[in-house]
Length: 469
Image 1 (tube, one colour):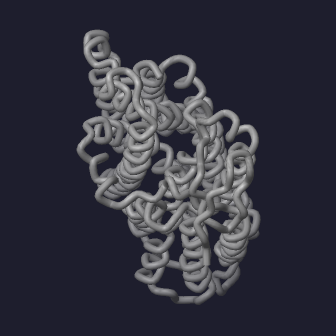
Image 2 (cartoon, rainbow, N blue to C red):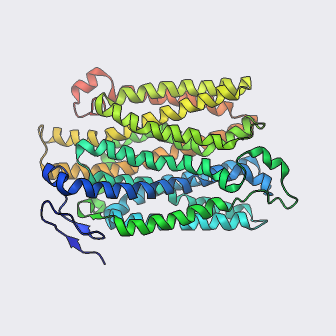
């Protein structure tokens, strides 16, 4: 049972309790107590979120091996198996964000990490049981969506621990550490399966049990239990994060919540959508290519690029960085089309690396700017300088907005998977989907410029800190 803690200034609160006296913007408090406590919570938050991303995207590395392991699923069914976790995870980001405000960051991290046992255990059963029906795989995919919700709750929680001057870096580290979970499962997955090279699938046994597919969910099951235990032992709840639902709803009335949500479809939606689909797209476009583990490089470079986007947003401006990223993403998509048509895997792969890097940069530049926008609006409404209570209210609105924006953005990944599925079903190629993505990036570029880069608009609305954080 936790208790409310109010430590004197300069002293650390005992662990496993509620910290009610949290003043990160007080430099004395931050140097003596806050920084150490915030860093400890960030470390274990990153681990839990990292594992959430891995579990969320497990099917991306399992589906390419299902046919060789004896499961007679169509390509359309395989795309649905990668799309279902994406869709469910996107919707769960909304209640997961609210859960931090209702139950506390530490408490919800324990629960969300423990919930990962459900999809990992269920998927292990599916791949260890010959003849498992397709619908049960779909159920496992639905529960894998639990991992997708972790990002929203983790980001909302960490946003309270850090002062404004360090929040961008902290959120960048937290987000990048989580995103790398995609690369981790796609790189280590084939290794623990026992088939780092897909070409070995040509030598399956008579029973179809050439690969140890269950090793992937079982490994991440154990890691998830570890993360839940460490969250219980080492993390804290902040009383300042407690926000009734009625105080979170105003975030939905902010126009910037909706504009940034749409832009996040193009940034994070691209990252997570391509992460889910990349191994299967490689297998369809270049069936002779054997080393599927190389697909992990896409999510890896995209994750590492995310803090870079936040860094540029801190020092330059968020909107121009995002616009440049969208333009280069359109170029990357066209390069991938050229690579497929020319039969050049090198061009195709390099173009996808451009897509991943630019989506990561844009993720950082947009997400870092969201808190700045709401803080600037609060200051503008207060005549230039917001009171401590107004700043706190802006933080609560920001936390709620972050969850909503991340949910809608993640839904973009579902659209990308469906685009690939529909294009492959109707034309036998993913190229039409890539052309649709080029058009979408043009739309996002125009929207971003229209709302945040026009000089006259910025001059009339100085609260648009996205144009100059």
